View: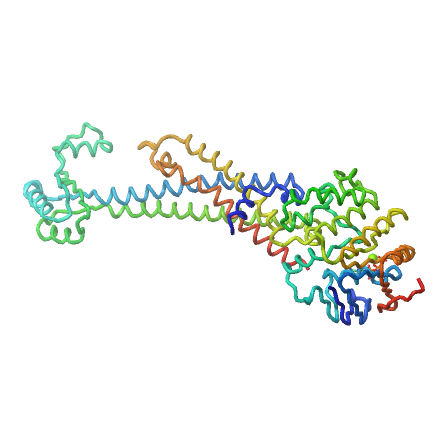
Length: 225
Length: 299
Ligand SMILES: Nc1ncnc2c1ncn2[C@@H]1O[C@H](COP(=O)(O)OP(=O)(O)OP(=O)(O)O)[C@@H](O)[C@H]1O
Ligand SMILES: [Mg+2]
């Protein structure tokens, strides 16, 4: 699905990532962890094409991400659902329309997806808040809305950056449950988190691999978690 | 562009429109400027059409009428007049030729000398009114023949004072056209500035739309539609006001001369109705260009 080959990245300062190689196979579940500032968000952005590597190659769906034009990049974004660390909503539209935004911009008939949309809202526990504006939501509600938006197009890959950063244990369990269910439906999942207990909880339910960034390198974490 | 796309662009996919937040103040400014431009364009158009009519009328009316003046001693005048009339009758392209009577000549002089002038007592040249046919005669050839046979005859085909007038009317029409082009250019510039401001103000919105997989064309369409519609409505209002203004001007009359002729005639009243769609077209092109450029610059 997504393949990084000897990828290096720097924002202009020193090298942040160096010679990173990883493959996200279809249906796999990966956690990405590491200290704050290690480059987790950066690595995720490289995976969905928001950043171009300074060295090496990123391939998504067997296409070199570097060679994509703007339209092809838009189509790629529809196949990869992303939960951003800072969520990113249109603040003038209510939550329900924000969640439906990917449908709208890809020209889907909203009428057909009505039931789906409400089920999804229910799933993330936002039915009550459907008509609130994003700035009126709590941090956890925003993250749930962001997760709902990332899966509405039923993408093949879901990349989530700290999806449980602002929610309590119970809610993070629910969000994890959602991701696990999506994985069971065959989706490829990549989650950046520094919540080790979440990773432990996940390991009981799915076969998840844990990648850790340390010293600019990506390592496969052992069973010591 | 397919039918459904065009349909969407005009009637709007209301849902897609909400994606970009509404902007009250810039919208009103765009409407106002488009209205002002539409209003000005109506007057420029009226000016160009009126001066065009004037140029044509002067050129054709004056070209038709000419005067032959016979300056001859009193005893030869009648004979020379007869000879000149005979030549004129034989000249192809001359429709009528008529010697003016003494009273008519006196009437022509009356505005200058008063009606109490004893016309008969003055050695006035005899005037012959010549009207050209269509196609007309060849003035140079006629002059040569008259020179040989009627030495006292001078043909005045009004070219001397007709040409500057026709030239003036034509340059007035050119100026009016330049104004119309400038109005179009100014509209394009204004819409480009406004569209760029809107694109910059909505940078965050554009970024989120890109993140969820919107194509540039989808994002651009939201802006293009807005500005095209604003230009269309603004210009339509301006044109209506401008046309009322032109309509309220006094009827064309001889006394008023050129000034009162400034308006539209007959089918001409339909021409200003082209201004709003043309304004919309200009806005469409300007916004498309601004949006394509700006979105292309994003990473
Ligand atoms: N646009 C940018 N320009 C310059 N430096 C940046 C930029 N974005 C991130 N950085 C720097 O790169 C480093 C890695 O950032 P990144 O966001 O990838 O970290 P992270 O692992 O996601 O951290 P956290 O766990 O806090 O989210 C940080 O030191 C950060 O300051
Ligand atoms: Mg981060």
